[in-house]
Length: 312
Ligand code: NAD
Ligand code: 13P
Image (tube, rainbow, N blue to C red):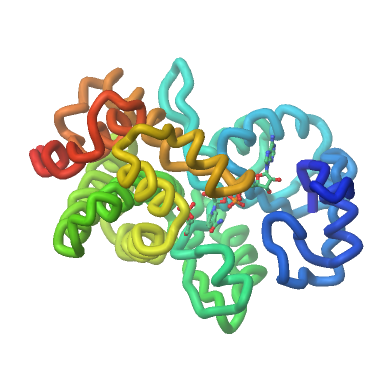
């Protein structure tokens, strides 16, 4: 397992601590990893013998990591991305799995779902969805590898749909957190989730007409939306943002509340907003647009209901 190296307050390196204690002392303390898991801070050495690669870092770091991996992988290596997010390039939006496949010239599936990490770590039952393009055999191999009695994986041939579900629900979770911070109650939150799901589907289908409606009923769709809007970090930090009347920035709250973990919803809202403005789609997506405008302080947190409910 490649680990982005850090020095812990004790002076010990994160990779050394993981290998000594057999647990991730900073990001997942108290959970024993398999004894076969060895933390390696050297990216090239971590990948050199691998023929199956699992990508899971905050999405803003993927491009830099992939550039370092060019020419370092074994031929025929298969990849899967668990990363929820997208990049916006000059030529338009680019999903993370495509960034990985295009940069490294390898096949890359995605795995998304209602998968809050610390619940999975203690083996509470959950489901996930693997999305693939064309190579069903590779997707089935990944499903076999990830499936356990407490982690049930289904496979669908809709890579963009699965990945966009995982990506866009983080923006809706920010909206749900704002509603919580404003003490607006469960009916309002359910309304925001419904409007959000509708915009997720419409946006995905406008970007990729091949996206299937059924994908939104898989774990990656409605189930991930529900769990993140109830118990995720995007929701929690957005609640704090609204309780502070928008006076403390998301960056400040993220640093204070998440201790090095990263919010994906705020940057994804900015990336999606770029796509909406470039394509002239803003009025069609009042919730997705409003979340970004609130995050950057252009609108107050209270606008979340006022504007999002002007559904296009
Ligand atoms: P995180 O938000 O907890 O961020 C911390 C991780 O980022 C650490 O592993 C740290 O080593 C790494 N990191 C920090 N700086 C880095 C850098 N410069 N380069 C590379 N890595 C760096 O991370 P996470 O929760 O593991 O999220 C990773 C991805 O998985 C995200 O796309 C997220 O949406 C997705 N995801 C997370 C969960 C969850 O519950 N945590 C569930 C499903 C999917
Ligand atoms: P948060 O990043 O909001 O905690 O969401 C985690 C997640 O993606 C659960 O599936």
